[in-house]
Amino acid sequence: MQEVLRLDKLRYFLYHISFYDILEILPYIGLAYFVIRRFILHKSPVPSSAFGKVSKELLRKCVAFLNKREKRVYEEYMVPEDILEALKVNLRDEETLKALLCSICAHLGINGDFIKLVVIDELMTDWAGQISTDLAFTTIRLDLRKRYTLDTVIAVLAHEAIHLHLYYEGIHFKDTWENEVLTDTAAVYCGFGEYIYRGYAVMQGDFALSYNKVGYIRQEDVRYIQELMEEQRKDENRDGL
Image 1 (cartoon, helix red, strand yellow):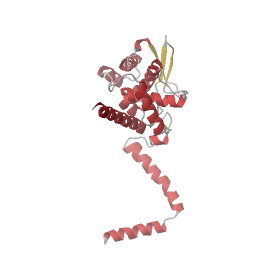
Image 2 (cartoon, helix red, strand yellow):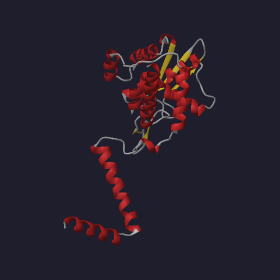
Image 3 (cartoon, rainbow, N blue to C red):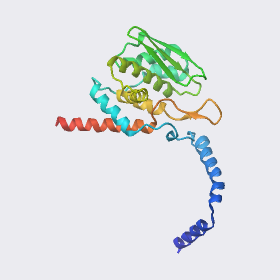
Image 4 (cartoon, rainbow, N blue to C red):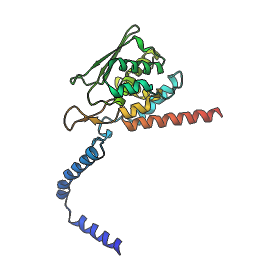
């Protein structure tokens, strides 16, 4: 009986509500969604799906290419505890940031001592990190915005170090956009997946009610890449039996 009454109330509501009523309600629903996620759940009210989407086909292409070209299997990277604790105290300490970069590079088999790290905070830039290199000298620029978390900084430096790694190994695509997606994919592939996942979250922007993110892939893309890698491991294990 109660179920019948509920259905009758639902039919009555749907019968009497108009398209214009729905349009009037939507802004209030949007405001409630914003308030709940922003101030109660302390999450970004903008989902990562609102940003540029990378096709699963391209991600599969990147993982398959790395499977062919990478020469070794990488363990998961962990920031050394002393560096982690120092950056929690002062994220802008350039000496510690350089130690972090050297640690990331060491994970990739690169000597980070010869890399010059330049830390800036410039609103006019549209990049989080930038690298310039030749066989003799490398400079990495980190645009350290006030909104960046420690995970964001780790993710950005990992991305730039991966650029150098891929450069040395001759692993690249001709298309610039695909090459950036390949770099993010390689960061996950080479053991920085969890830092990339957390660092590429949507965050508060520099201005009121503005939101943005670093990186070329989304958090859901990171998980998809990890799934592809796990499938690859299972296939290799089956072939080895």
